[in-house]
Length: 484
Image 1 (spheres, rainbow, N blue to C red):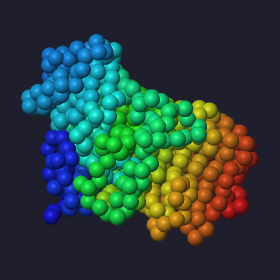
Image 2 (cartoon, rainbow, N blue to C red):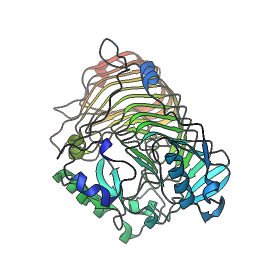
Image 3 (cartoon, one colour):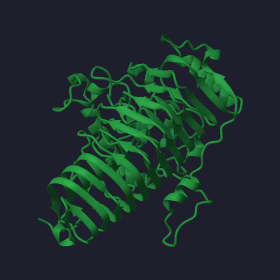
Image 4 (tube, one colour):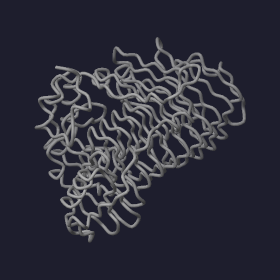
């Protein structure tokens, strides 16, 4: 059977429709942007990424959901009306499906090519929390592994030219009683725990199937599996825009573009403090711009990903040509993060002019991987990152979860941090390589950590270059990064 690619799918992907096609799925093939330019080393600059990342072109005609039966009173079920409006918009060649004012109760929203879902200021999409509303299962990626699972709350597969815009709110209504308890017990969180609803058995079964290379169609993890869906997931789509909305109370990851080309996330507020409430997780995407956003999350603010372990290597698609700029990070496990599902690699990322600060921000710059993930992380540039309060300033950790137990050593190289300013940290650094595979290829210039309780943890580090880098007013030299 030929390799599966996004052109083989039109419309929504259900378990019934996709099962016969997925058996032979081995890798993803997507279009390339021939207009991109590169520097003398073959890498796109930050400005080039901004210039060549294509935006959707949406027809200038509106389809108010009220015209299809929606009642925005916070009580009526608007699911059918929103679906009808999207279908009519698509059939008419595209345009905006508009939620103008009030609270629209809904189940999952599935977008189609050339359609912009516009949630205006003063409007709220309020999603039901009954899991049965998110069936039938769809083709999705969960913690870096492909499976058939609950539909994301906003979903599109294999669509072109789509957008989610406006000044309104998308509320997943997840809380200590709904969605979040599926995470299982957690000593530091206060969501409820129901043993019969713990995700752990299904999670471990999915890991085992992915490692064994089982066909994706056989990985059925919807009803009864308790694997929470992403909030917004656009899978294998081209020319995607998410702009202006506030996304809150998510079951799982908030914004999750997967295997997409030309993604722009602009002026979005991500606010959710539940388990695994990552803000924006581009996974195996090419040409991504994330700018002017606010992140206040229960997990990583931005996490760049490319598949987990065997599944990531099977698909073998890096996340590349990424620009992150002018964003604000508050609470979170990490500000700008790579990993941990990183087996396909990350290359050519530029992060600049960002501000981070919160007593609940655990790390500012974070790379997390291990010897089961593998993958190559290369040509990473941080410039002008201003941090107020944080626990750990700079983290490169090869011991995340499985640590050295694996046959796929991580590679991190050509990472430059310029103009990092940190006012207050508990630890300046957490740099943990393996004895036979140390952290290397890190360059820091014109960086200052004004107050740090300690230098932190430095294990198995080599080939660090420093220029005008100080902690607590004292200049550092590379010798101080010799393994303790």
